[in-house]
Image 1 (cartoon, one colour):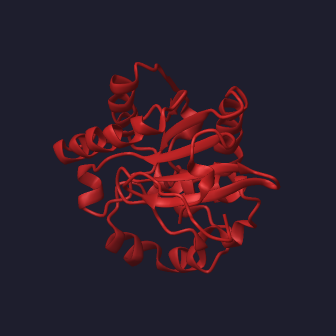
Image 2: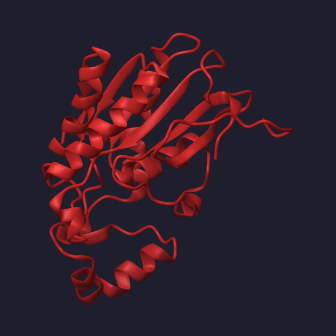
Length: 219
């Protein structure tokens, strides 16, 4: 998706950028708040994405303090000369006993819990956080930094797939049950929220290239 709100000078923007690849991503192993580093491929993804995102002329960068997000953010900081503010509230969902397990192991050991989560029920996966609790801690941090922007400023938030999805859902005013309708983010892809007349709008989702304006009636 794209919209003219992605053009500079049409209100504040929030770019929510997922970290690059890790070894646990490749193994389909649940990371959660476990502090896993980027692979060499993940670092290359971050460098490539940073060269694209610099064209959006970001004004501020805030990131999760976990290594995979911090290293991703550092690549954008290097090409923008901006400093990065790290905040643990932007960490990935803590998922207790699920963390470190592969997808197949989770299905085998916690199959009903996984199915309940997919049905949209409030589930403490592995005894960890509810998705609404993740949004409760992450969304206010994003809004705090967005409020510091100038009228047409751009904030880049470097975080994790689950945290980004719940934060987008909260900022769009969606019910928690509907957050699953937002597809996941690929490694080092991003989503863009723009300021509209009725609040934040989703302008780009799971993008890996620079946004293009919409030329039509629904801009």
